[in-house]
Image: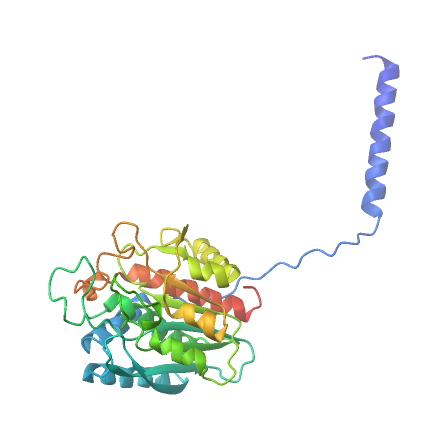
Length: 335
């Protein structure tokens, strides 16, 4: 390398350093983003949730107009009351597709009823009056226990209510247990979507509390079975896609990718459909789906196999921990 070239390179290097120095000395117009502190979210106790499912099953099938239904209702009200909730019973009568008049009760339990910002968590607490799945092999005319279909969602919500009492958080949470969800007409000849979800239809037309407007709602249905798989269901994606995607992202960030999958599935007639279309409140559905059976649900759906043996505490925890994360992120303004 010649002397002249060395001088030229040295000069260029000096100019570059000078330019960098000027740039660093200039005031910045950009405010650095504050570092977000981690949010302390309590652990979801899966064994406690399982015990709540087992307690419901111990009453037998929770079919409207039965003694087991009434005794379970009294227990549910007592549990929410014990956790410091403001509890309201909403009785209603509705004619089922069979012509039978069902005497149902929706149960509404409010955590921090005075809080302005609120979210709604829901499930149905009744169980199916017959085992009419095409996969049912015996006792088709007898009611089923509904450990997963009804019991699992309620068990998760009870455990969340217990956790909130022990670990207070600054956001209102309303727990709504719908009745008479599972007394619908499932015949192929003349399917009638309005025959399902009688409790949520009544609540959506007669909101408790009056004028209720939560930020959003999350419905749980069949969330406790072994290998439970939750898809992005069609009604949820139509009415509340942002909520659906945020909840799924939250679950996946927690490591529950085997349960909360990215697959999209068709619309399901469930309580959230009527909450969205009648009450016009955005509500999504976390519902166990399976592509392995002709029903689209797990093989235990609407059969006598829907008993306590089908429940997996890992599935209960995946859903419960995800919802706790949502609640505490919401309270911090970060959901």
